[in-house]
Length: 263
Image 1 (spheres, rainbow, N blue to C red):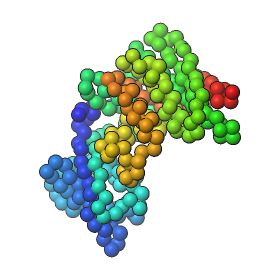
Image 2: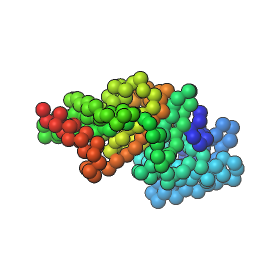
Image 3: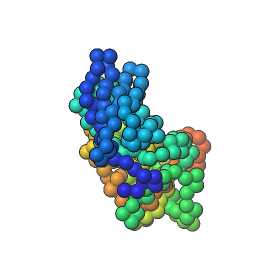
């Protein structure tokens, strides 16, 4: 599977816990294994072997540390197993740069995920937002579609969903359903949850049967599965904009979502 940069599939198992709450962990890649210890209390990571896999782990240590840091203390226990993916020499700074566009390309049986400064010039653009009015327990979404000629079409809808993150996800799903025949799309949203979920987190979720690094079921599984299906055979650009920052299209979507929810 090509992800723009080479993706490696690894497995880990916590072999035992020491008296000082340090955990002995074995990581495998095909027939090669590497041992290390990790201390959740102070995040100390020590490599115990020197081989090619250890070298790879050291070169991509940020990704490994992020995996361990995201695990809850209670999920460190003897026997815990996990399958996970690491991008070789991933440009971590670029993926963490909110101003970068992340390109997810699943066309022609490929799967690439890279970052760019600017996307394609001629591409359908989708601006999405959602609103949940807690006191009234009402939710709605809105999205604007901008075609190649710069013409807009507005779409809104009410929903029984009572979770802000899920509403943002639902808005993108509805937009992709509306443009299901288009193969190249740019999605502009103020939701990091949606952007990172579909371009980074989902790969490991799928490797582990839709479970997180903590062994818990992914929240809103059916919606993520639907979004994953809607991205098949498409070239997608994901851009993040700061909410309530006078971004014209995002502000319009926010207003229309609130207006629809209030009805």
